Length: 288
Image (cartoon, rainbow, N blue to C red; front, side):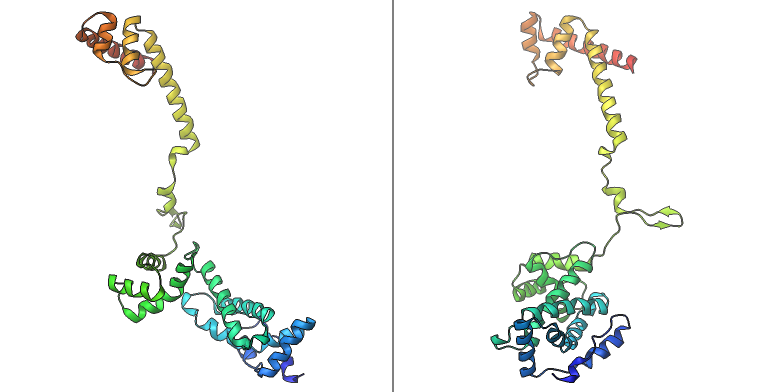
């Protein structure tokens, strides 16, 4: 075994610069050494062989992670997630396929870093579909290559959509998501006063418990008042009001229909209706 490969694993307790320096001291493996260690790990489960495969590729993770610093996340966290991807790659690597571990591991390293960025870049997940992920990790660089303006023109949007194989509306939506910022639901305290926040205008006060109870009580009182006012009417007036304003089948009776029922003129029915409504309003007002 190559004695140089017994280098201790870089410690995460020190600074990021010390970690990077220690990782870069790990020697590179030749193709023959890489094949031997991979076969030894898969055939015998030798964890020391897997460890040496991981150590020799830590500099690859550091290099890949450096390319994602523009998202504003800690370099150390990006490297840590990339290392998880590297270990997954070592576990699945099959040298019999005829490729080197560096090529195979690149996909796994990027996949773990991508997942970490998507979960932590914003409180609300900014990309979930395959097209959105593609846009998230490519839109910024493509946009910088086309314009220095804050937003894309329709022609530039169409060009990016064609290049990435997505719809123009997907490009516009992702551009809006990436340019937006997180906004706290609750108000923050400034000088002892709560600032105006989304919770102030997103809350639905209609279902606030005290308002629900007040609404029910009001409806009950209105219902009781209506029945009491109806009971104060004579039989004919009550029949006319119920037929005109409270029909059981949902269809209000016409003046002419009621005129035929009581064998009077339609004008007489209208007069009785007006007087009955006035009496009911007065009765309900007195009972409030």
